Image 1 (cartoon, rainbow, N blue to C red):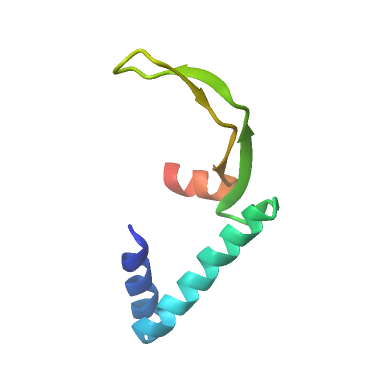
Image 2 (image 1 turned 120 degrees about the vertical axis):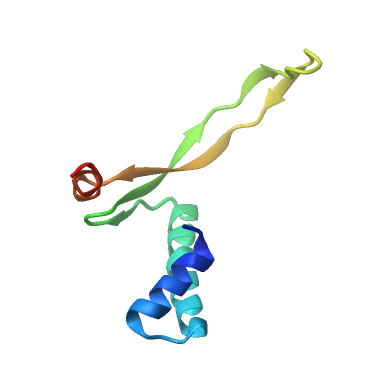
Length: 91
C-alpha cells in the first residue's frame, strides 16, 4: 500500500472527501517526520514505534572501481513493530 492508496482507503472507510483524507494523512506523516528530526521517539500503541538510529562515518569502497571513499555519518529512521501488530500478522 502506498500513500495514495492509504488516502483512498481512509476516504472510503470514513466517508470523507479525498482532499480531507489527503490533509489527514499528510498531517500524520509530517508529524512523525518532525518528531524524528527533533530526536523524539514516536510510539503508536498496537502498531509500533519509530526512532532514529545514528551511524558513524566509515571508510568504504566503491564496488565498481575499487576506489576508497569516506562515508559520512548518518541518521536513519528505524521502525519496530509492536506486539499487537506482530500477533495480528501471525494469526
